[in-house]
Image 1 (cartoon, rainbow, N blue to C red):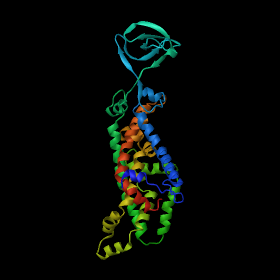
Image 2: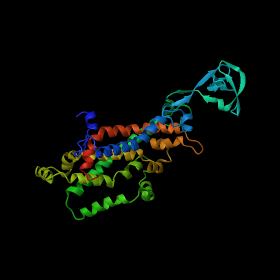
Image 3: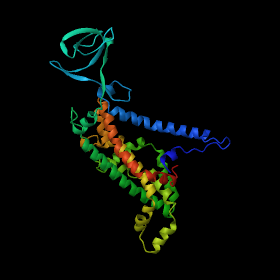
Image 4: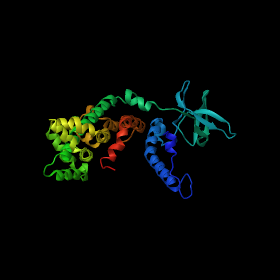
Length: 359
């Protein structure tokens, strides 16, 4: 089936024999609204990240990255170019020779020494379309006063935290789910309910106690202090347990009859069969760890060399001024790894969610 056939498929109306029925209109309208709600903020961030600083600071709502033309004037230096529209409609390229007032002093580009006065409302900016690649290159290459933003250090820390936390999360949650789904012991259902019930506790409530735990174990200020406390998640245990319940117990009994150990059964049978659910949990874990801000801020605030990308973005927001063009550009950069992981594992999402009771 081609993409065009899939997108143009309709159920029609059997009573009137029309190809497109009211349910088709409602379904496509709902899908279009959903796509716009999700994509518009992302596209706005992407297009704003390539706009010049002046356009971002002035809240320029145009999609294209327009900026005022700047020319090198002989004997004067670099000046923004303005278009002066005279009373007779003629337009002349000028630059401002003084401060902006109701009557502003300007001079022609080819005659900078010939200064004359014009009404301010007769001036408008000469604009051109220009992609502001410096929004991306300045923080990455430490240019134009961005020497304190260590992009590659932050990137390495984020990748380490995300990968290590995801691997530990998958292993710990899979082992817990295996025990709760395949072993019969008193209190199994009670343990499951208690674990799921922790979803009702907001994370902000346990921050203080979690802080003292991390401090007492001596991992405060290290990346492991960010990784270990969040390794066991009730969502992951519940998701994997529901999926493992669908694995036939006869497979495990057959393996035990062949003298397979419990670890070998878990590692060679249960984990491979749980790959769709593990993929869903991996995607969720990557998103959680990569975008996590509050807990890394608490644990890593004293050591800037341990900061992740999300913490690094705070350098562009000061008390009196914020570099929104850098914030937008680096936000787009941080979206790239998440997008790649999602594209790589998206084929498992539907299967995993449909078979784990998360619908």
